[in-house]
Amino acid sequence: MVNISGARPHALRITIALFCILSVFLFFDPIGFASTMNHNLAPPGSTTTVTHIVLFKFKPDLDDGAVDVACAKILSLKENCLRPNSQHTYIKSITGGRDNSPENLQNGMTHAFVVQFENTDDRNYYVEQDPAHLAFKKEIEPLVEKITVLDYVSGVF
Image (cartoon, rainbow, N blue to C red; front, top):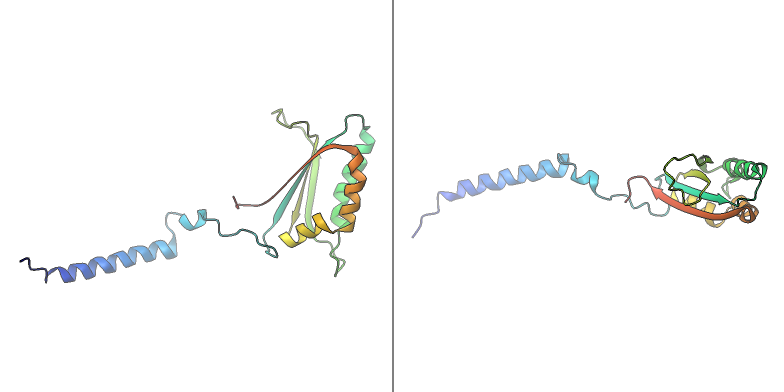
């Protein structure tokens, strides 16, 4: 028979060492595992910035003046879109402009706009209910041939 009574101190030391190593990984994340996990799925009501990208292909027969007016109206949504209860603006920022990419991968899109919202509730209100935005969508509809919209939360893949 094998005598294992001397193995007990070693087993205890190994257990303590494993506990310490696991604690380091759990609390300090030395290999960056926790930072690569998808912790934020941006549920409704979250305070994670939502980026809303809108790409337009304006109809080719439009004059530049009509396109300029449409673009100015898009940019004015930042001031015209108001929270229903407070009547305060809720769009964090809007930027945009005419395509100038040399890559030739635009698929005909001529203009891009980036709208940022504080959270998904603001974005959802904008898309589904905001009277200023809904009126603008109807107004611009006859001017565009194609629209592409993408929304994302930075780092959520």
